Image (cartoon, rainbow, N blue to C red):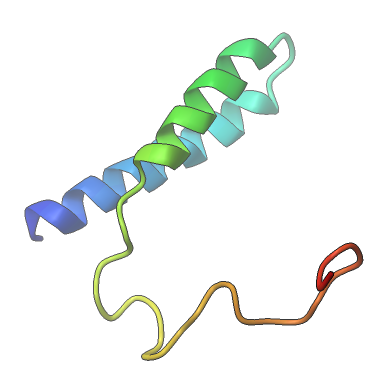
Length: 68
């Protein structure tokens, strides 16, 4: 696996572990917010081939409150 792919997979795994931790009784929600936000911000672009060609995450239906 390439270094870039390893970083992506490791970050996604950490986010998954954090989500599981959030379901535990007595989970520290301040920790979850801080670490989750940091992990999400550090998430690199997905490896090539993961998303279909021409995929645009901002392209989709308008939701209430959008499209001013």
